[in-house]
Length: 584
Picture 1: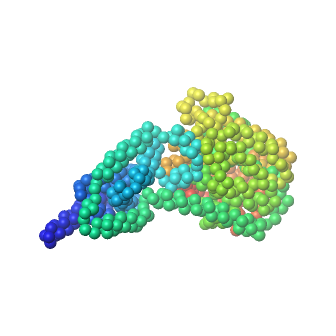
Picture 2 (picture 1 turned 135 degrees about the vertical axis):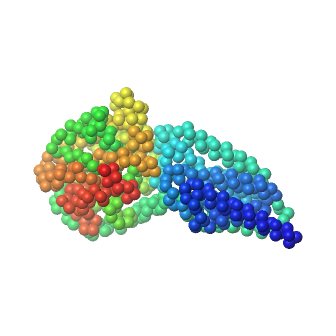
């Protein structure tokens, strides 16, 4: 008996060593470096699987099933290292360990509950485990990109309709093939799992299986801080920041009222128009070879228009951009988002009547900081009523002109207009009369048509607001651009510089241009300076002559002589990339 136990221990030790070094070899092949430091979790996974295998009558079938499921779950590491350098090795090791421990836990759970619970519950357990490889492989083969936390956050803050449009534009046959392949392999694993039988007649079986479940679950918990799950944790952390932003709304408003300095007798109407997914690289007013912006091209010839040639977006997704652009938070300060006062909060405290007009979907009352900011407006009109259903608008952007004309106007007012603009699917953003670029490829042609229609819409908005007796100026900027030629949209995980090439311009009334001639001259002399759109908040405060100590930043206000135009400091993707890379 002692000899038999000794052999079991010897063989068990050899199995553990073999599995452990095999896992080290896999990680070394993936990263291109010999990996052995901080690999204790791999050793622990090897020990757990070998010891657990003795609870089964057919250990060989157990190892095959465990290996197949573990490989399926861990296969996403190949995607990461195929697209990235050999960084974050420790977090990758932890995910590999997590995958193997999770596989062990799933097999144990199915074996234990096979006769005690409904089968669909166990199938659901396996499907939940497969979400990671399905999402990451489907996304990789469709977009040739890593499914990063920014991507997940964008998905979490969108709706089913927008997801459908995105998939119709970018999802590929290879992506679908990957999902089908994973499902087929999972089906084979599932069949094998049903035939991997526990040796229930063993002494103290219940104690052993309970211990195995506890150890496997604990090992999964200990390795939860890993390369893949951190994608979800980071997205959740950002969502929590957004929730905190809403909770602190009353406190922020109180701080503004206490610290606001008198903004003089500044009167007038200021209009802020926010474009969507618009690239200046596809605007003829910025040098594009197709005449996509005829009105803007003529407007730029007038003395009361200023075109900014080096404007960049601070991110490539709408929510991160506007969260910064419309609050005191930016890439260059240390302010916590929840403490960052919004533009509308400040304007209201300074005595401005505020209005928010949008053709974007209002997902729910408090989904994002954008809806929190918009909720502060005294007057609101959301013309896209398909909340949570689709991004196919009830009307094209020109319908916002009716909303604009319906506003109750005052002599001191801030009007924010958020267009649907050039958001994909591009062909949904313009009426048929604007489908003029049929000689180009479908995607590029549709995008250029949407740019042409956007130019028409903005021209009509400007034509109306300039006729208002108290009109001061209209400021236009896009949240981000789309990499249309590269067919990448604006996905941050597949970042290219064209995603940040946004238009920005200001049109002044003749009265304002004369009254604030010094400021207008500063802006004209700054039109070629680098600017990121997370600084819109400071520009608006400068134009509206609102001064709040410790909130307004003159070094980040391009209307000020103190604006810091050093190109070395400008960033995008929330500080991950420097604009100077694109300018070199």
